[in-house]
Length: 154
Image (cartoon, rainbow, N blue to C red; front, side, top):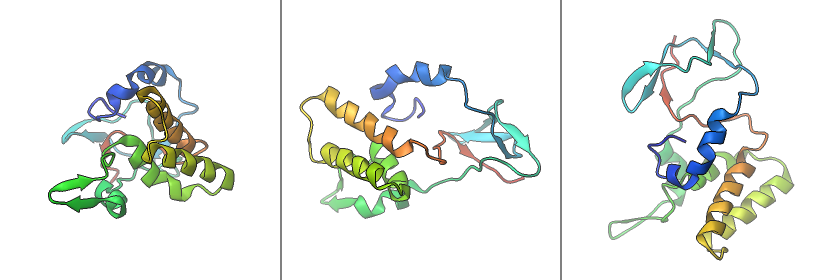
């Protein structure tokens, strides 16, 4: 999550720990030299090791509009649901279909349903539901969202 995303302030207390956490291992990525952040080319993350042959990860761009299209409603200029631009909702749209473990999928859908239907008593509980949902969705996941838009062509 970048400081440019609306959810950043809701989770600012987690940013320091995330930045301080050492990577589990260095990933080899296809050779490229620049990432694109808000239309400006900047050097790619120095922790990424370019690989000419095989690599551990690829960078893919996902069309957000297409991802949330089936959940989007429009009525008299109103676009919903109200959480359409929230990171937890977008994470659910991206990852939920790929969860194969029945117990994990059940916990994800229970948490998602509670958040969507107002099954919480306070803002703190709502934020904790959102954090739990994203944590459940990304646990053991091979896919990790990137905050930058990258041109991975050689």
